[in-house]
Image (cartoon, rainbow, N blue to C red; front, side, top):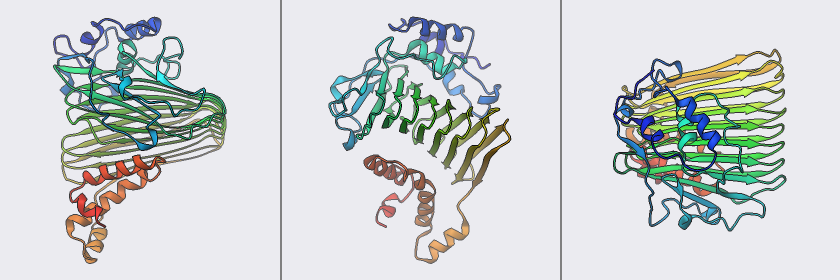
Length: 424
């Protein structure tokens, strides 16, 4: 195990702070799991590619309350369906939920109204347990059976670094009743040095449909360790896309489990990295029932001295016949010093299935570059066009127009000569 060497390091600093109110049994169970446990280290198989030594000696402390004068991000489609959290606390001044149908709850969590931890379970894990023990406030989205929410819902977690290194622990519980439908945009952003360790639990009942866009654009000095747990019931559909631009070191851990037959899952990811950024994705998809379909496409664009890690595990349980599971890891290296480690995994314990996986790591195709240059493109613009083309197809699946446009501009900004591309 890695050791947190700083005096009053991450875990002692957080667990030494007063315990927030509510969910006492849930919090004490998490504290017990954290006893004697330090930050995960590269000696552990699941963390061997991610060096957390930059965290060891930082002066972590609970995040203080914060305010901003204007909401940092406003999606026009969600002007009346938006929650904003600043340093882990809801800021009513920037929230507006007047546009929601009757019966839809989109607000801060109230102790006892959600069975936190039931989706993820109690398997020991450092960052989710730290979140459970000390999160300040949380958000809930509850859509009743048969209700279709047409308006996108926007949940913004905005974080500000300050004295020391604040620790922000966002929490979200999503519950869609049978046949309910909704689109949720979950966004994490900020400025300065801080650590964000969000936990999201999603519970979809029979026939529910959720489009879940997850945007990570934390500050360049920040650390981001996100855990997502989802249970998808029979004939339900969960479509999740995670786009990562920010943070110095980030990690995404989606854990999805089918709990009924004929359910569907889309689990896509895109990471654009530069400088010394590190982005790690460790996913697990459990096919525990027959006739379920899952598709996972994960893309990384790594430039400069950045590093990307992908480990995707699909487990087909005994009895999960007629499973259809597809997984692809596609990676583009833009420099000789960038690095990608990828490991797609299939574990199949049923005999009537259609499963496939694959991985590719490469650079821009010289023939494609030559073709564009022969048509009058400069070498720099040709590189930008191909890089944008590699990343943008995944963004085209996002259903919220303003978010799709904003992410398209973010991709352009991460390529040199983006202004030239805008003019095409």
